[in-house]
Image (cartoon, rainbow, N blue to C red; front, side):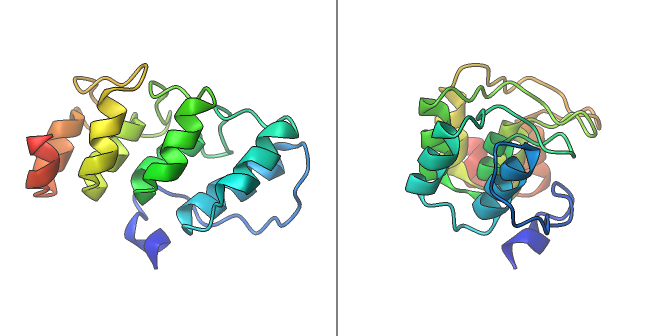
Length: 146
């Protein structure tokens, strides 16, 4: 259900079920975050096995982007504490994690991202919109207050 809500931002779910030191493990992390089923202990395990928190999946999405769009504040905090950078953008549409959280109406995530290294509220996406403009279009007044 949550996945369909973010269809403009997310690719179809990955069907890979292999956890290994390959890009496939990253897909599993992305998928768990979207589903709201990413226990921090599992993220710790994947990180210890060599998975980089700023790696991107085949669609160019970072785990931070996925966590921001899903409103997973605890996961987002964990990713930032483990070296994730808030600056990378999705090459396909030019959106950042801040754009994703703003579009989804996650004011608490937006507030945290604004204090993260690399977050830029003036960055324009592929459509020429900043994160506040995306929130405005989606009528997320609470995000605009942040």
